[in-house]
Image (cartoon, rainbow, N blue to C red; front, side, top):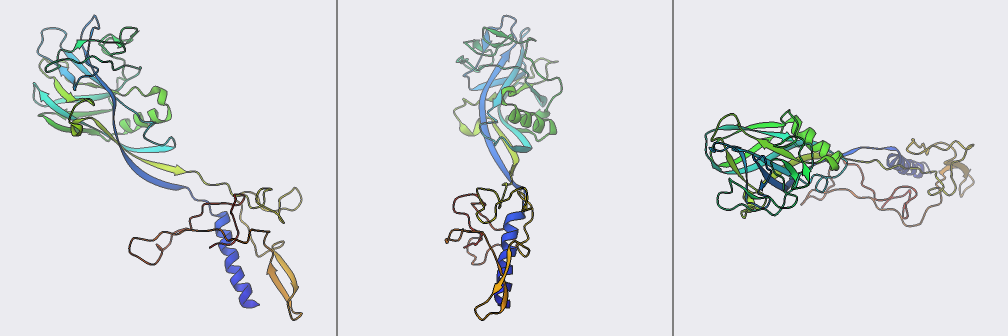
Length: 333
């Protein structure tokens, strides 16, 4: 019986490990998010110009004698691509710059503070002059043409930039990761109704500094804007209550029996889980008095590396049921 008791003790300790160990599980993931909207704000006091459906958006200043400033708007669907409980770790914005009228210029990202739109306007040619705005287009004066005005002409945005990058010749450019970009995306994830994206602002103190970037409507997929986000998720720990009315039969907690509470340690080597009695030959024995359970053991799972026969060392068992779930059992297969 000693050997039997030893084996049972090992089983009991395994059950204890299942019932009381609670671990926060962290998983790191990276997602590539395409732009949801982009547009250009063309300096124009009347607010009649836009390029919502164009293949490009512009940043900086053209060589025009007036109305030469260009600012690019861009937004991404954060909550639709990242779990709500995610913690943002890194953020990088990659754009393809396809035409320039200047040398290296700093281009800054600023968080937009109000909702704006992308209509069906589609400028011709180089697209640098824009075209007539359509319903819901963002323009220099309207954030939603022609019903909702910006508080400030040229867009409402945070004064502090989220990132700055020097852009020179045509090619691919990546902003970030910066802490402010991470904070921006985390804020948009936590509060989707405040996700208005970024505005790109270039050198507006001199003429002929403009840069043309490919939009999300560009026919070449590899040239379209991409937001790369690395995040971790915290999977909530299951509440395991072995002695609830749902999980227990012989042992159900009440105000007097002192059975352990949810997620509290369980010592199966103490009463009432140890019962003394007589063995087949009249000898005194102690045996484990487990609760009434189904006769089919519950499955547990372990991970194997591809091509290997032994489980990965040091891993915890993976279970898909806890006490109270249909199919749970104190004994495992």
